Amino acid sequence: MALITSDAYFKLLAHACKYPFDTCLGLLVGQRGADGSVTVQDVVPVLHSQHQLAMVMHAALAQVDMHYQDSPVSLVGLYQVHDRVDAKLQMDAVARKIAARLRQHNPHAVALVFDSQNLQRTSEPAAALFTPQEKDEWMHMYNGLIPMNLAPITRSQTPLQFTDSDEGSRGQRLSKMLESRSYEQIHDFEEFLADGTSDYLNARFA
Image 1 (cartoon, rainbow, N blue to C red):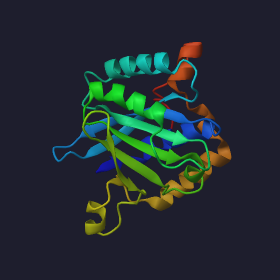
Image 2: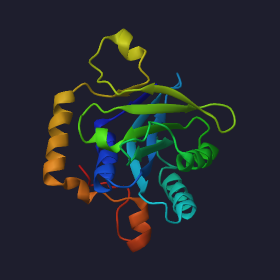
Image 3: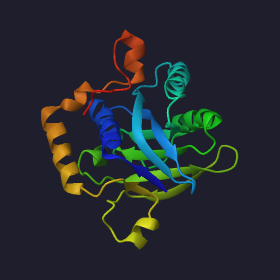
Image 4: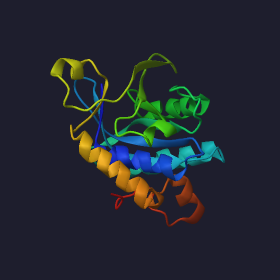
């Protein structure tokens, strides 16, 4: 099972909205529970293009890992947002390469895959959760993201959930972000490498 906070989700969403015609990739930050579940408490947007992919990801993993080394949270996975309308909710070759490197840091890392078009239409978007298997294989766990206010039995059987149940508040937040274009304030690590001033951790993004 994977849980994601609304704040982490909206950073991810902002990254996708800022670059709607690119496939966006980023890192998931959080904690792994004793039962194997993962709680995503923050995300770090990493890149939105294929330019110097290996260099960007290598630098991002090193920087982010160092940033959180004395923190109770750590890297727990990656996210990918497909830009194509016809793209299936699957990890592509790029995501798999990044995931393989991430698993060197955390063998239990997970992957979340979203569709950019769907993200902007609903506060409860379609998503896919992948968990690591042997070698470089991944298991596709589930499509769908549901609020926590469903029946306990249903929640326990659903691997991907929000940590809160306020779907209405998320809907309002989504509308406000799209109308105000506040997503333009989000920065990824690729931008940081280009100008050296962008806050890729997005500490002030709300």
